[in-house]
Length: 131
Image 1 (cartoon, rainbow, N blue to C red):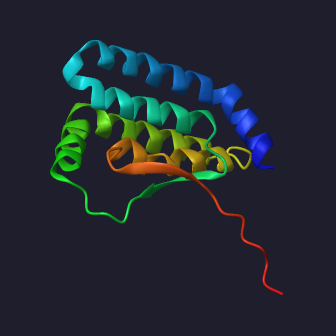
Image 2: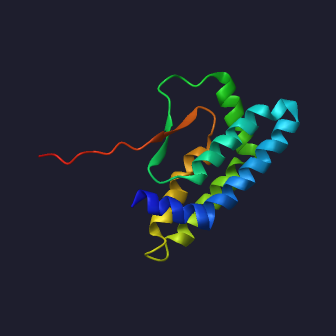
């Protein structure tokens, strides 16, 4: 089911979102000072291509001052807009029963779009049922 969801997501939404993040990342790489933000845009592009079966996790280590400054700048210059798009898009997708899994994936992207520095995308663990 996860693979089918990812294929549908990729065809309907994923390619367009990823292309936008890749273009933004390339533009950020042109300006040398914004390379760390370009790296985060590429991380987001990878996540939006294949979101089912993966989630965002923040490390146990304490965020350094550069992560905090990067996240603050990210929020000011685009993070709030990206988060609003994920929130509104997820709510619209959840209106129909078929769109609910896609809406949930849009909601899962909110932490990453708001605070990408210090976040990493990890595979979901399949939990075996208790016997």
